[in-house]
Image 1 (cartoon, rainbow, N blue to C red):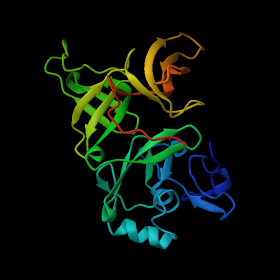
Image 2: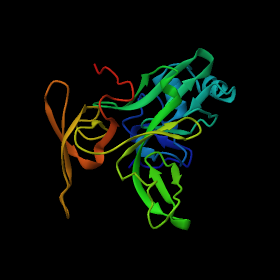
Image 3: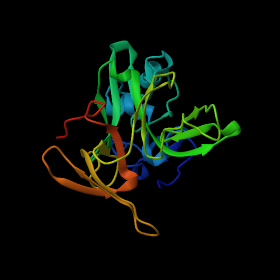
Image 4: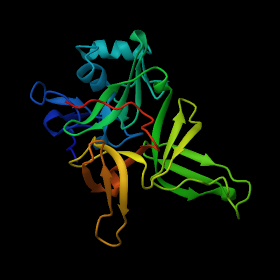
Amino acid sequence: MARMGSKKHIKRLAAPRLWQIHRKEKKWAPRTRPGTHPLHRSIPIQIIVRDMLGYAKTIRETKKILTDGNVLVDGIIRKDLRFPVGLMDTVEIKKIHKFYRVLPHPRKELILTEISEEEAAFKLCQITNKVTVKRGNIQLNLHDGRNILIKVSDAQNPVEDAYKTRDALQLALPNQEIINHVTFEADVVAIIRGGKNAGVVGRIKEIEKRIGYHTSVVMLENAQGELFETALEYVFPIGEEEPIISLPQYS
């Protein structure tokens, strides 16, 4: 975890590696505000607009772009320089009609991949856990901090609850309506979200769940027939037959 510099800033040398900034150019960088994604898995929107996309050269220019309502994250206008942006979020630059999705990368950890306007109308969220709440309804807690309530007609027989932890939901933006459900199981297409194979896309071949201190692992096969093994927690399903989302071409 990066060391604190202040409540609003962090030393550039201690900033997460996924922030694609010059480490020695200046002393401080903006600290992401607590919210949808944790510090070590998110990028301040200021860095995205200025450093990663290059739409501004200074903080003043970045602030003007944001205060004019030109940047939307997951379909909602964001004006806070420190707003956290993370995995699978969509970013729209309204004035120039550009759309991006945040995806894992083997070296940079997270990158912005340009997508179409149609694709920017949804995002994929992975279910991190689920709990039973009042009246037997089911609350799904997702990787980006949001919660989805599944109302059931009969708490003793909740047929509406077809969701399991590690499944992915395709959500319409910004209203969060569930439009598709991708199960976490063999033969599903997935992307590795972390570790040394981050960014690898393949079909799940085997899920080996282990008990105790040993980490459960998943075996995936990419389009070239190569096999990759990774920790269970790093695997994010993105489609049944084909990926639902556009994928980057890594160089």
